[in-house]
Image (tube, rainbow, N blue to C red; front, top):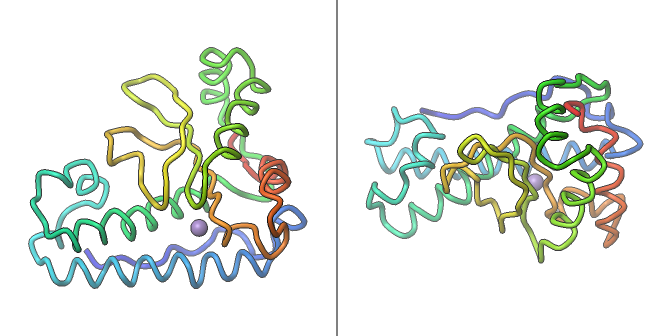
Length: 192
Ligand code: MN3
């Protein structure tokens, strides 16, 4: 498993004016690529992990008895890779609504509006760097946040929607105004 940076399926400026081109370039080409480079280095040092699927690795990390340094690297850099890969996929300049997901959200949270409200709160309240998530947890939809690059796969959940609230995701355009970034982000979330 030598992991490569996935290409965006849209232009760097495609999410303007909500997410600016320069942020997309730095975020994808430098931040995401950085996680992959560090993850590959850790995997090279642990040849037994090379043929493991990364999601499978995340789910079973505690049982692998890796050194603290390597375990941290997989949590941070493997999480960084998985989290960002999902993030690019669920965004786009045109809506590609997943009706089945929308129906599940309405059933679980009452309405799309109340889902957004709860998600916004969780994303706003995450202190420091991290992610807000909609996950499938044992066939139930849940909203929560994780610190740093911690992946929901670490606790056996499957991420469906993830919002990156690290400052690198919004600082150039929104500076300290995280709620404005979150509000703008809904416009380029294509799946609902
Ligand atoms: Mn990021």
